[in-house]
Length: 599
Image (cartoon, rainbow, N blue to C red):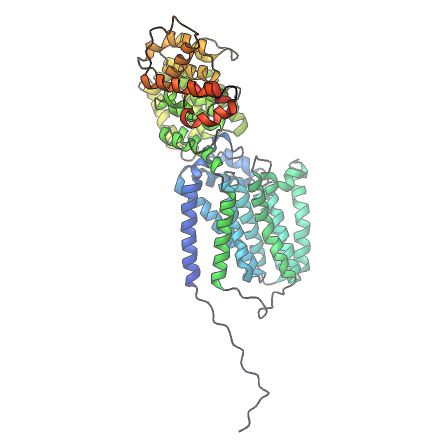
């Protein structure tokens, strides 16, 4: 029997890979991503913002807030993303929002690549989760930009999958693109760009022409002509270009630009690979794809993580929650920062350790009360507790002018108005807070309490603040703390902060005077740093009569003698003395007084 050699053997079809590894991989990655965002990033820090995130949105229920957003391009995206951002106030709910947005951005990107026949480079779609993680690692609010990106890619995919006829697709794109621009602002240009790439790849001339024209036409008509916006706002709203002006970090800017440009750049590969060609497409197995995705997330997560920035946000959050132990524990992990120093001093006071352990942390005079920095809302609560109610109110109103009507700021203004007896203003502010997600219950409870007791006589915190409030006029250039002590000699916080202020200023004569006048009205115990300063003043012969009979702790005396002996041995070489003595004496006032400027 003669074999027919002219017949070709049947082609071998490669066996399809099982789907279960992808499912398991997806579940494990999602869980790991969720845990990292919730535990390491902690969305509560971003929601609290610490006065450091300028563009974090406020959100209110009601038609007025919605109508304001609907009246401009990109407003719909801002409204939706602003609502989702409010969930950041809870650690796990906020993490779920972030993970969901990362997953949606990845799925939409992968969908677009599949439509172009580029599914074999699917790992490129992981740029979405990578970018989301990197931006949140930098504590920058960019949920609106990420949301707009996802909608833009989804809109492009919707057009490409809408009709079988190229002509109908072009007509649908012509009708859809204006609405996309109105919904997501300048990011609608990304939709047009992706449609242009797909149109050229598929050789659909009408789709290419319509998308290209729309990229330039609609922002000008809707933004510039109808609304009178400037060119930059009309074309750049909701894009990384606009985000970079919102005090973002360089790493966050790079990440957002990578998110927006990666898909178009990679998709241009479709120009050289016909969509109908399936036999020649490279095949990458599942496990290498997984390794690429995991490696990209881990590498960019490590690159974008900033421990010092996280500590700054964490300290502010724990301070607002009055978790003083966590404030101190967190503050000790980083070098000096004036905001961290301010919150740490407040935590030390509330733990009864301001005069006992303040020099265990880096200190500066400007950080104690954030002097000369009226725009920082961090100082508002410190001023309130001291009794400087008007100063706290001024700081809050300036912050509202800069950052908008944040719920936290409104809540503190409610407290100030209650202290001042202005219940009408407090009720108006509470009415606004009652329309904020996650603040409704607290606002309504306080409204009920105000109706029942307008002066909140049953609230010990309000009564304490009302008692210590400065009742006489105070002009800012004059020191505030002496005014508070003159009015209320038993104001413990004003006394301890005044002593801390004099310690940091190295003003020993005024420190002795303040100590002699007020200390024994407040306490019989002399904190360690106060003893160190008074002992130093006595040794320098500053006040013989006032300190003659004062008894010092033996360990303070011994440490002072040891320090002075060691100090003398270095002569005028202060740099060498600072380096050698810091380990043993760095937490004493002696060291700060002589060598503090060299720390």
